[in-house]
Length: 94
Image (cartoon, rainbow, N blue to C red):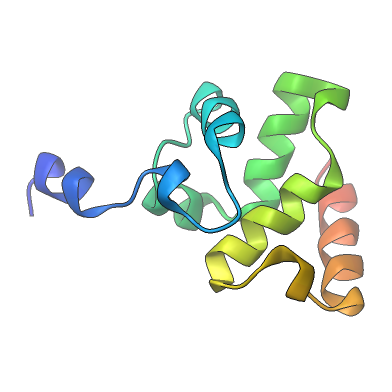
């Protein structure tokens, strides 16, 4: 499949559950422009890029929202254990 066709099939960030225009802008600043980009990178690495670029302007909720987006659920539906695990992975990656 040609790159252009692939891009058309991939959803934009703002079309994804839990992620709105502000997150879409921030992710675009770190070269995450589509659902496929986010899936390829993963929530933890995308979060690390956001933290590097925007620092304190990014909360842990962004990590939860991106992970929930990839699981197609509401971020509040992530279990406490899931959140703890994600936070630990993000801290290890930094």
